[in-house]
Amino acid sequence: MTTHDHTQLYAALAAEYAQRSPASAGLHVQAQRVMVDGGSHALRLIRPFPPRIVAAQGAWVTDEDGHRILDFWQGHAANLLGHNPPLITGALAQAFGAGQGLQTGFTDRLQIETAG
Image (cartoon, rainbow, N blue to C red; front, side, top):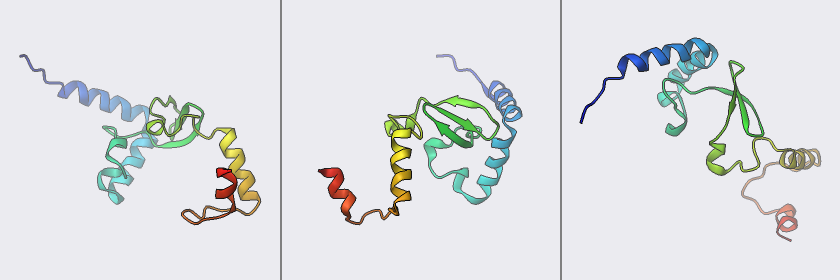
């Protein structure tokens, strides 16, 4: 079995990625100062650094450098409706506007209405 050394290729690709994504690269340096390995979840720590996302809509995310990226991951299928679907964000805005908050873990009227 032949093995190949891809060190130079990896270094060249990493350098080009850093050049094309300077904002995400800079934020990764900052993140490494305050978080273990620069993030809160090992699967999100893409090498050499993850894109730092500033917006998400539908199937697309936008990083700090303005790149639109098609999100095939979709939060491990938790975002089956996409990012920030109006069906959900509209209902949340209406609930927040009515004074309902995120009292997670407590029983309330909404729980009964939703189950009914």
